[in-house]
Image 1 (cartoon, rainbow, N blue to C red):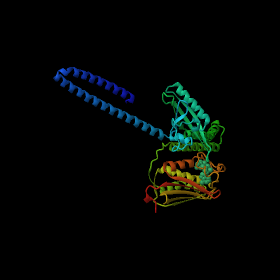
Image 2: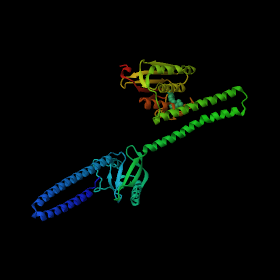
Image 3: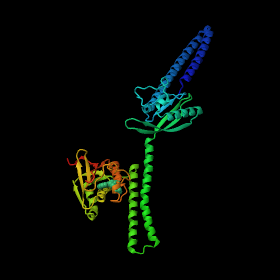
Image 4: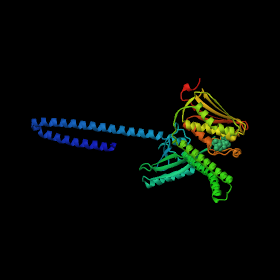
Length: 434
Ligand code: ADP
């Protein structure tokens, strides 16, 4: 808009012009004194000129007030933005000293934003704001560098800050350093990258584990197919056996890929659950009925206790996958002749529906209990008991917690069986029996 100095110059120039015009009119008035008619005309011209001068002066004053208000408004808005940014922001002066720091920057320096003042009168050394001294030096050098170049250029620097407190932690940051103005000041914005880095680490860990898991069935399929294609297997039984292995491994591969895809979709927030009113008891009955034959083959006593009429808002297919995985695990890991009990109850306190799958099998060792829901986690001592991918429980957790905002857990004592449970909010209070 208007610079206050240019408004002043314009006002002075205007006043000078008007004064000259007024002086000229006065002179004309003096000259016309001999002629009274001409004098009257001149007097009214002067007063008109004076009014115009006054009006002009008032309008200039109003413009000045407006310009000042706009400037103040801008400064307040900038101040508000500066303090509300989650990213730490620092302003360095021409000597590389910190002359502005937003609350986030004070917080990472361990300073109390309520108590600590950082400004041109109370500047701080950059090394007192960034505890990693190597990083502080580098940022200082880079800020001098961008200022000397005097362009819109910017520099980046990545560093870590370690907190040696009660719970030691390391946070990763990326600093973006750019010139702020023509007075040698620079702006340093610190963007925390801890989470992004952790995500990248988890992603590559997932890819490494997934590749490893995929390789096993693939090699098995390849070996079986090689035996069959070599023509060495004349015996029909042997050929059938190798075909069976190839089929089984293909199924395992397909399950692995499907579970990985389902987990990735849910974690990425792109899964499209088909939510509807689900009668959990009826759903559990269908799943259990489908597994009865497998239970009988293993002489496992499979029981179901259902409280009827318990309804949740959920994706029936996904919830069936959860119940199926929990009961399926029971069948895999309990020895012959044991018992698996599935119950569906209401939990009044949390107004949710709880499904519990309890078995009288081997139980889970205490050192493994917190990890069984992790991706690809399998309890070492049970690896020979049954085959698996280590993804089933992780998929269950994703379906329950991410898609249905429920909870999932396990209680177990080694040798005394396991009790897996999950709860999903009831779709309306009436569905929970009081
Ligand atoms: P998997 O495909 O290996 O069964 P899961 O994610 O379903 O993968 O389970 C992870 C691990 O938890 C299993 O490998 C097994 O060691 C253990 N586990 C799961 N259910 C039971 C259970 N009912 N009893 C004992 N161990 C179990």
